[in-house]
Length: 542
Image 1 (spheres, rainbow, N blue to C red):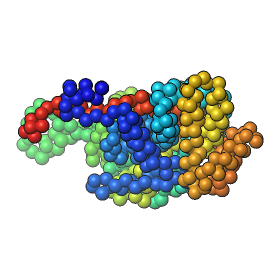
Image 2: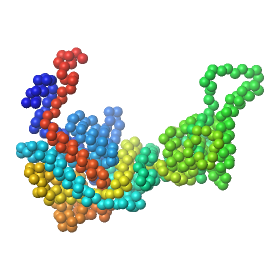
Image 3: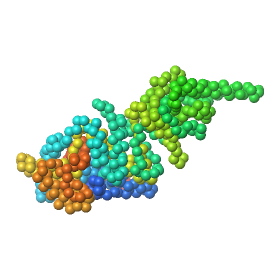
Image 4: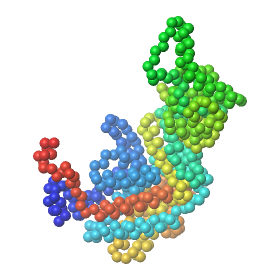
């Protein structure tokens, strides 16, 4: 009836109605699920994305895939947007969310094909979600002092990174990620992840990526005689022009002899030279016992001023980026100044080492062993662009995983152990749910198994055998047992340091249930925009 009414209003509307509509939504969710399914877990496969201009990106990060893929189907697009929005907030869980939504709709289709109304299944899903969230609160392992437990944080970072990188590189980067997060962490203050700079250099291998306790600037000095390596460096961050500036008013200078011309040029330079001399005098008064001096300036420094500074052994960087200026003071201490008058030692930062590295035509300045260290850098190296991009995506997820662990002060054991425990709990408690909504609870319980099933499948093991093994072992030992992906046996993930984020689990459950319930309750999809109401001839004329 609704279809007929819509056609009366807009005869050009395209409509998918009732049971067929649910099939379309389920097919879209399962299609997206099948694309991402093989990526889950440390044994998952990679996807190669090729752009229109031939750019290559190799990744298994669900967030990157969903952002980069061209998705046409409206339902699949809706799922992808919801999953990537969750990743933007909590930093992980994209692939899990897509798999779980697909499985919830697949399980629901079994019951709707037998005549059960989608509303009853949606009600069952809501009941099951509340039960699982309550169970999660008891299942999680509280870690009130996790910020001081470096080994646990390393394991959290490693669990996240190993799903996207090779074990050797993941272990190396886990150290860097933990160092970076701990360096910006302050008790009872919100962490600003923008204070961790992710810098890349296209040389060497991925395993040579490292954590820099300091800042890496993507520019260097502009004078050949300036020092390339300094130790015990006082750093002056400033926003002062040290170059000759032309007057804004049109003016002419007339002279009758060479001596007059020299005096005119000297008087023009005097203003700039005075500022440079003030900095040099300040450096002489501050640097006593083998200490050195560096200037990082946001404005320009002209060649003559650079020459004066080089003769004094001062390292100078000009036209530094504003974000680097802000982060330098956080890392080295001191404060940025807008004038060289009345300079004081309190405005200076301090670093143990400053060095310049040249790569092709690019120069990089490393400011290391800094005094305060509330800002830092993760330097990513790689032989080519797609390796660097893969590392950067993985490191971002690793940083978020460690940050979430510190903020939640709680962890959830991984390797599919939580999903199996939640499945067992729902199957026990479904009898307490009255009416046909218990079928929705049962469908939700079966959907929870998609994670351990996919982990087993991607590792090359028999899915049913692996699930039965975990279930029997959990029943027997009453421990949160998961699947060991190298041998296919059961093990205790917490003893091996396999941890999942509590916040990610919570968000996946909330998001997937709400989205799957909404898609179940859609009974008509109408493609009937304003342009579709126009007669065919009118559209052709346009």
